[in-house]
Every structure is written in structure tokens, then in C-alpha cells.
Image (cartoon, rainbow, N blue to C red):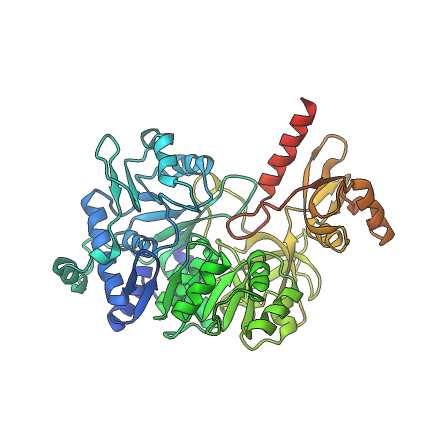
Amino acid sequence: MARDRVLAEYESEGYLARKTLDEELREVCLRRPGARAVVAADATLTYGQLDRAIEAYGRGFSARGLAKGDQVLMQLPNSAAYVVTLFALMRIGVVPTLLLPSHRRSEVASLAHELHPVAYIGGRDQLGFDCVEMVEQMGPGPLGIGMIYADSGPERHDDVPRYRLPDPLQCESADCAQSAGDTTPPSNPPHYRDVALNLLSGGTTNNPKIIPRVHEAYAYNARAAARRCGVGPHSVYMAVLSTSHDFPLANPGILGTLLHGGTVVMCHTAAFDEAFAAVEANAVTMTAIVPAIAEVWNEAWDWYPADTSSLRQILVGAARFDESVGQEIIAKTGVTIQQGYGLGEGITTFTSLDDPLPVALNTQGTPISSGDELRIVDPQGHCLPAGAAGEIIEKGPYTFLGYQGSHASDDCFTEDGFFRTGDWGYLDEKGNLVICGRVVEQINRLGENVSPQEVEQLLEQLEEIREAVVFGVPDAELGERTVAAVVTDTVGLERRTVLERLLQRGVARYKAPDEVVVVESIPRTNIGKADKKALRELISTRCADHTD
């Protein structure tokens, strides 16, 4: 297989360790049994307790029929049960697909059709929403789901049995302790080249693509990111974003922290009161957030009474970061900010701990592995020089090897094996990556290419506009028209006023939005990106109401 040839090459070069994620974690558990591993609302676990809980969960899943190669949908909140469930499934070779708390019927139905999962494992309370009830109402039978696990609530044993995940701390019985101490591998263990888990693409316009991640490659991804970020046994990483995202899961995230013997603190939300209290209570040293959260925390630090002095690092990624906000956070807290860029499909970059502020606050740094190859190319595939923006393409030891399901045939690789990221950016003179936007988000308006990010920056320079999100919608005359959703304190702000302001600044007329829609706030995805799908639906609804 082509996949095996690629993996064998990186194995021979010393990047991949020929171990599964669970094997790597178990080695840490055996070395540091008494060290604190996971802190969450539902349980606090040492590495020894974590290993015993994983073993008990795995045996329980196996006893109820889950077996190597089975697919399951997993939609749990940040918790100790999340960590235990994830590794227990991987230990017995079952492949979990990590749904986000925000995924609903459309995504569940699409993934069930693609993957034919035998089980669904979900949370009863995800910010007030019962994901398990949603699946029950959809009818697990028609979805092909044979059993449901919930993190709370009663069990039922009807046509589709409902089980409750056990309390991770219940795995302290003599039987569990004995089984966890047995280092004999399972009779049919997963292979290090098997798929460990499926991530989902972060797109906001369609149902997500399925991204298979191989055990040894994803383990290397987490370890390489951890090395760049200085993670070690004394690190205390706080997860405030959903750990079903690649960023808080493995860059370096909970995986990178656990594989280096550190402590993971799981928060349900990124709300500053919950996060700041967790920092103070657990001497948290590092966390990962998105720019929208950074802005809220920056304001909260001015008045909220919490001791966050243990916090030494903040990783920022997933969206454009305001340099001035970064400077204010550093001045208030003394933390080091590391910006990063990454994809569920592969490439991860980070600035370095010793980078000067202009680099840390204005670039996304360099690839985390010497095996990563990153190029900036023009539409014809020609490499561009430093400073010239083009599409980012890449390949490396942990880059995925193709989508699963209906997108398996997507033409997303070049002939020489580089993944087309669809992101637009450039490399500065020192090789640092700077993200400019999405290639596919270029709006083709009467043959002119309009960059949504550029227009957003122009709009946010106007005193009338606090925040703007720009996107294209189909138009019979223009091909695509440019729509700007804006947050403003100016009553009755009209498109004409915005156009006049932009033209006064010398902006080309074709870059000015064709439509300006005032919204109270910008809807966002789970990792803080503007939810353009929701905005398009809002525009469509308003147009329909106007027609009626």
C-alpha cells in the first residue's frame, strides 16, 4: 500500500516510533504511577489510576461487543471520562470519530451514513444541550447504531441498549488494579500503522470531512508539538477548548502533555471565571485559546480576582490575532505567547519560546518537525519567494494520507505528495509562516478576486464598525456578491456610508461590500472562527422574510 510505503520511509528516518498512542501512554503510566495525570470535574486521576480506568473501560466495551476495527461516534464534553474513553477505545482497536459539542443532527446523520458506526458515546449536558437525547430522537436503529453510551443518566436495555460510562474512580477495585498491572498485550492489539481516531474538518459551509489519523504518526505530531512548546513532566496544561479539536487534543494538547508525563486540567468551557479558577487551583502553566477568547480574558484580567501567576505560556491559533491584544496580555500577566497554525490533516507550526515579540505576535512560526516540507505556490504550482503570498502546500511525518468516505477521492494532493491546504499565506525572510486567509474564500466578483480577510481588515479600521466578517454568496449578475456582516454601535448604518468611507480611504470600489448586514454579534464555531455558514443562513432567512 502507498500508505505503508510512506509510513515506512518516515519510520526508517527515525521520526515514527512504531508504537500506538496507547502503548506510548502506558509507558508513561508505568514510569509515573503516582504522578497527577488528569484533573476534571468528574475525577482526578494519577497515571496509575488512569491506566487502570482505561483497562476497565476497555474490558467493559469488549464485553458488550465492541471489537477491533469497529467505528464509534464519540461526542463527550471535556472530562476525565473523555480521556479514559478515548484511550480505552484505542487500546482495543476501536476507532472513535470525535464529534464537537456543537455538532447536531445533520453532522450525526452524515457521519453515520459514511462510517456505519456500531455505537454512539455522548454527553447528557453539553452547555445545556443533551446530545444523547438528540441521537435517541433521531432513532439509533435507522442510523445503524447498535448501542448508546452516556456520561450520566439511567441505563435502558431495549432494542438499542443504553449504557452509562462508569465513574473513572470506580476502577480502583482489586480486579481493576490486577488487570491494569498485567502488561500482557491484548490478543488482537491494534497495529501502530492502524487508524487511531478520526478527526473532522473544521469547515463551516458543509458537513465535515473525515480525517483518519494513524497511531504512530499522530503520536509523533503530539510529541513534536510538545517539544516546540517546552512541555515536560512539570507542565500543567489546561484544556478550555473542546478536546475533540486537533489544537487542544494534540498540538500539544492533552496528548502531548500526557505523553511527556505532565498534568492535564479539563475545563468545560473557556469562560474566564472557570478558567482563571482552574489556573489558581491547579497551578496551571500553559493553555491554548483562540483570539476571540484572548480578547475576553484580556479584559477580565483588569478586574477579576484570581491568582493566575503560575501561567507561563498561552498558545494562540485558529484565527487572526490582534497584536495589540497580545501586547496587553503580556504586559498584564508576563506570559509568553506562542502563535501557531495547524490542520487536522497535518502540518503544525508554532513560534518558538525565545522568538522576539514581532515574530511571536505577527507570524505563525515554523514547522514543528525537521521532516515537514512546506511550500508557498502560485496557481500553477510554482514555488514563490519570501514575502509573496500563495497557497500553502505541505507534507511530513504526521500529515494524513487521505480522507475517508465520500471525500476519499478528493484531489487534495499534488503529484509529488504535497497536501493542498487551501490556506493562503507567505513565508517571511526568516522562514516564519504568515497566514493571510483561505484560497477558496477568494470571492470572484465579476472576474475580480476579492480577499475576505483584506476587506474585513479595511472595515474594522472604520470607526463605525467594531467587528466584521466578509463572505461571498451566489449572484446572478456578479457571479458572487460580497456580503459584510458587521457589529456596530452606529444606529442605522447603511452600505452607502460604508462605501463612502472606504472610497475616501482609496480602497478600490470592487473591494467594497455589495451588502452590509448589521448583526448584534458574530456567531462562532467551537474554536472561535466566524461561523459563515450560520451567517449565510441568517442572510437567507432575512431575504425570505423580506420577500414574504
